[in-house]
Length: 213
Image 1 (tube, rainbow, N blue to C red):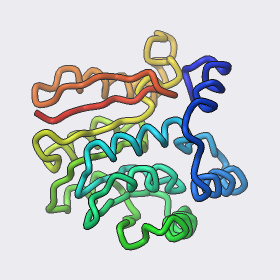
Image 2: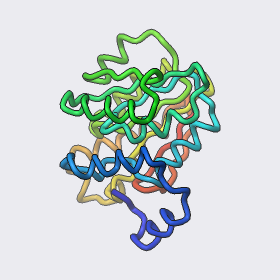
Image 3: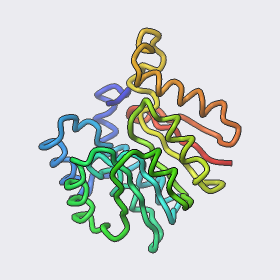
Image 4: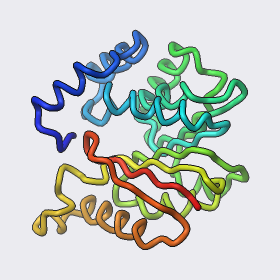
């Protein structure tokens, strides 16, 4: 999903550093075996996630919504040598593909995959994170944020995908859709949250960059 005009999207992809062999493999496998392959981050957003991770140099990353581990691989690029990424996926049918992809990427020892409901899993964690990426059930975005914010260190970052939701966030008729309402409520909640600052980037389907104060 993208709010960018197709010809601009093509140009962005052309001007962005190409995917690695591993990411091309994940992209191919995702399109071959998944019903909604567009859920994958893709080359432009994937490179953005990698760049952010490399700038932050996190020790601990939390990812909410693994899908086929494309974004997991991208985020892992900035980890400190001893760093780890915890990634949570609710769909157990994706586990085999995820494990295959992180092994092929050579990051098996850095990744902890957890299958289940993210809000419940986060509530049982006792650790802090430098960087969080949210890309899961849109209806629960606010709940994910509330659950994870206490675990983010001061000065840490949360990235949230799909916050423009194909432009539906400014379409009055689309507000009847549960996922659209979930995104709108999330955006408004973040804007009013006194413990963070936020900017929305119109990249692909919109990414919120949130910094905990």
